[in-house]
View (cartoon, rainbow, N blue to C red):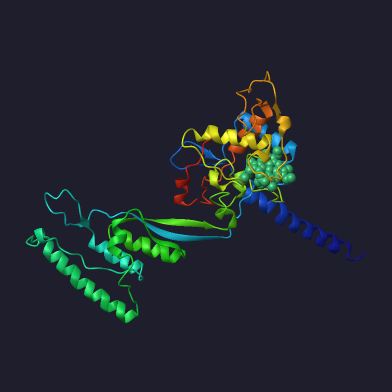
Length: 360
Ligand code: HEC
């Protein structure tokens, strides 16, 4: 046993290394994760669940919904884009006095756009005949024509062929906000934003989160560790028999497995109703649904509990059905599952706001 101490020390070191790699490093990386403030609001994400939703989390767990549903949106790639929001103020005013129309053209911006998108046609800017005598404007447009000629020569040298038809730079600059570049590398998008900003325009970098989950509308971004800091235990789920529920509370109506056409009024109430009907009997919404019915969360007479509301409106059924407390709790929990709030480590695309999310 001459080597006993050495073997002992070796075993200690390998155990210590494994402990450091498997326990200490993750703790250092993730142990201090806290909800992040949502910019321009007083709120945090993930928000602490209100009491009813916290009870709903327990109902979700006790009913084993995680056996068939995951709560984890995955993303395969991220790409970038450049969006032009404002033309800026250093344009040439080509509005004809008295015509009531404004026509301000930012010539620098037209060049910047043309540089950012070599596939766009750049057309000369016509001077309105009423302004032909304007000593201020004419030289500027003259210079523009000269610059344009030079630019075209450079194009030829670089082998860039600009189409004669299709949208021109001038048209693109006329419709704002305009997506100048869509789904390109970060370098290309940054260059375009820089060119446009230097020309006086207001441009922003746009991100595009990509992946099958995001295309299905299950969320606007991937799920990250921070999304689960308020969960105990974290019910990620590992089998996707049903759709992912990580963002079900902010899912657009048409993105459900049984899509519906949302009414324009009071969509939060409508959303709640819809989830309650689904819980009562998923077959009422999707004929062949294999999602198990949780009709035991409902009663046929009004319960005496605190959250006993109005009877549920069920498609094709007249008999009143009252959701019990746990049905409301489960729905409240589902509504707190949001996939549309960005985090510093997983931002959401600016366009996501278009799908008017339903507030819990
Ligand atoms: C046997 C597996 C299974 C279990 C367990 C299950 N579901 Fe489902 N769920 C599905 C399937 C499959 C769908 C797909 C749509 C359909 O068939 O209606 C679905 C759809 C849903 C939807 C609609 C989502 C969408 O995008 O259309 C919700 C909400 C939902 N389930 C909630 C729950 C809740 C809450 C529980 C726990 C009480 C639960 N599910 C348990 C299989 C399951």
